[in-house]
Image 1 (spheres, rainbow, N blue to C red):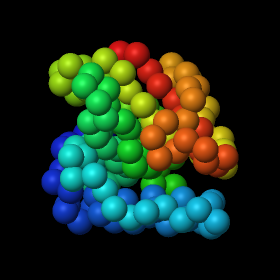
Image 2: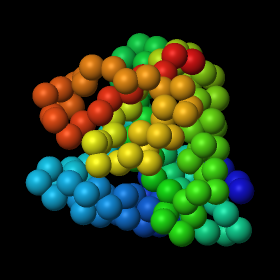
Image 3: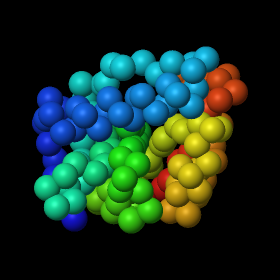
Image 4: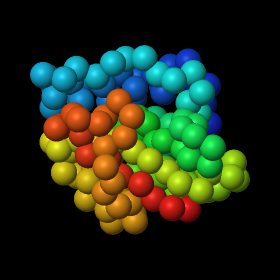
Length: 144
């Protein structure tokens, strides 16, 4: 597996991002996901034998704090450790940018995501920012 940093308009990245939003909208039809992305997002793309298999983005949140966005692994590539590798690479990049805390939001209907984040050392925190008060949101943080 190769992990690369594509530009946001990369067609394979865009394909994965559309699939991620489609999956979220299927799980949460009453709370459709906004399609806009923060222009400060820096993406990582997992390439498996020439095929885009997964992606994740790091977005600055506050001084020393970054937020994980659009963590997604294509269904045909799940269960192979791709998400773990993407997050490990993201954490290395975050440290290099002097980010000491990572935040993320996932949802109550994503038990596989919750299990992954908890396995990787993220801890549940109070919902922050736009997620505060949303009963479908679960928020996590990890000190680097």
